View 1: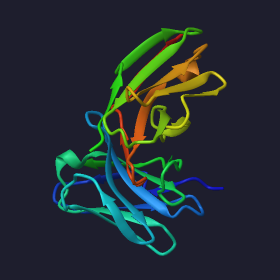
View 2: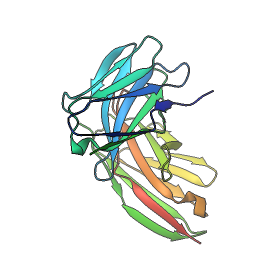
View 3: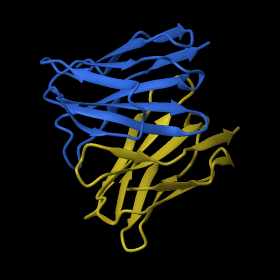
View 4: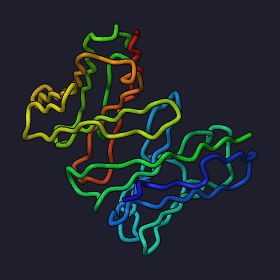
Length: 114
Length: 112
């Protein structure tokens, strides 16, 4: 069974641009969540999607948005990029995002904002 | 909301020694606590987890203990090997199941 797949692996953008990251969960997993990983802040929760609905959102500005498609694939969008958005963006999936379910991560998209 | 603290931030041990990483959490409603290992440039990988109805769980050289009363849990690695060198993250799942709060990580170095 294929794991969580994220594309692209690396991205370089300039301030003010926007970016879209993609995530394909493990087959059969319907919950997809996104995390931002930085050396200083560790892993920070962005949002979680299930059945095309955002169920939970972390403490990030509205420039960070996402969506989920009917096949459970998810995209994350960041608009008006800032230097501080440079980070590793990790997608994770679980069966239903229910209590006690294991969470599996993708390899991440490394975003650099110049 | 939930807050997870993790200590130490860095840990160096000699090969063959044991390593212990400790985490505390703030929300008594949290019931599921996984540990992840992240090698340089790779994805975080789940190595062991524990649920609140269990006090201890072992998997070969790795064990996790949970004290719900004190709201802390620990990762124990015995007979450490160089390939155990990585950053380890503890986490607590919120009581809705949709969000995990992670500790800041512990960089473990196993010296040959």
